[in-house]
Length: 148
Image (cartoon, rainbow, N blue to C red; front, side, top):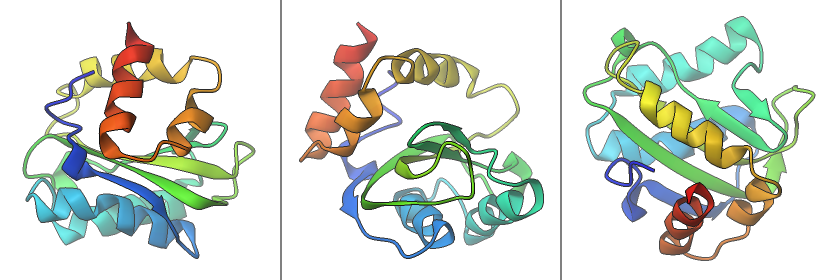
C-alpha cells in the first residue's frame, strides 16, 4: 500500500460518533490538519452522500468517503478511522466499522491506490481485523501483510 499516504498520524482508532456525518468529519480531521483538504471538501463528502445515498459504503463494514477534487482537495491524501460502535449509513452493508477518507487531486491520481485498497479489502475478515487493531502501526502493518 502507498504508506506514504496512510501514515500513523492519519489513522484514528476506536472513535465514537453519533451519526455518519460526524464520523466522516472525524475521519477527515487528519487530512484537514495536514492541509490535504479544506473544510469545504469535508462538507462536500457529506453532501455527496445526502445527494446520492450511501454509495460510499462499498462492502460490509467499510466506507470510503470522498468527493470531487474541485471541492477542496489541495493534495493527494488518505486517512482511516475505526469506530468503537459501528455507524449506520442507511446501506445494506451497514453497520460501518472502518472509514477511509480519500482526497484525490484529479480523476486518475488515486487509481493505483484504489486498486491496492480493493485487493486488500477483498480478503476475508480484514475489516473486522482492522476494526480491532490497537495502534496505528498495527493498522498499517495489517494492510501491508494482507497485500503480500
